Length: 408
Ligand code: ADP
Ligand code: MG
Image (cartoon, rainbow, N blue to C red; front, side, top):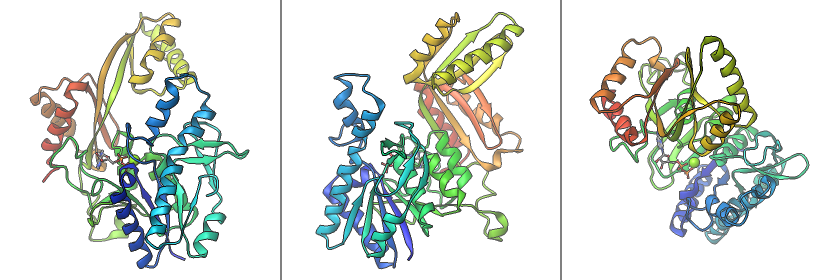
């Protein structure tokens, strides 16, 4: 049996016309001899009647502190609705299909409601149905704990479902269908001439995704990478070949090593970041302070980024929505933090950055020419980040895309 996992995002299942196109992609897979296992997200995006955010809105107005367990039960409904509608579309077009919930599909998670981790997949139930010749549709974004509690997997969770199923079913590939033709050098919503990348390594897309390119969830890439299952990012609405995510070792690929000579793969951005600066009195004070601060943030489940410990201050960033919580904790500890809300993180990602002098200089120059103020910067082997004012984010991404000639 040749299994192909096909995941369809929220925009792909949003309308009857689009769902017909989804069935077209499933039908192509059947024609090519595959047993498709189809993963669906909830219908539409925030504001649409059955989108996850809309479901959350139903209860947040009544009582903001609904237990996470119940919230997960509610959030799992979006994919259920979408799954039933997809199965009925398949039936209406003559296909034999069955819908399985995360639990029925054997997706076992830990009990971190709202952001559960998949521990393992028990694929027997799916395989039973595929062996009977049925198309199996699985609700994305959800699983079940060992003791039967329904959990959800956090933002981008349907990508993770698809990747975990791909590994467990030893699929030939994991196809992530969305509303763009593939992974691009920047978000096409803000860079007009962003270019499709034909091939990208797991590491490169993982970096891009961690830095905000939300076309795929980084956890999904990490899961697929463990077993080297190829992923393809494709459009539901075109026949473009899409982007192949693979592990392009130069020796596996003699002569056609198109990936490793690329200096920069793409530009990613993360809006809605708050910068926090905690001033301290002297160096000894800083050593104590940073330890205490980051321990307190970890205890409160606040993830921190862009950490910079300086002689007279500790600087870091958090997501806007947890900024108030972070500030309150710091004040309770006796600190008097300075807070800059409305920042954004802009990153250039590329395996070729390491060891190439002048990339940072080019970045700084391009941003200065575009009138962008750099609030903070940091770099690693494959990524250079800058923190900028939110108003400068789009201009910064566009200027960097142009400077590094990613659109040509
Ligand atoms: P889905 O509902 O299919 O999961 P998402 O909204 O999660 O779709 O992801 C697709 C979107 O990701 C695109 O519409 C695009 O605006 C955005 N995106 C951000 N960065 C990139 C990038 N580098 N390449 C392609 N798309 C990107
Ligand atoms: Mg997505």
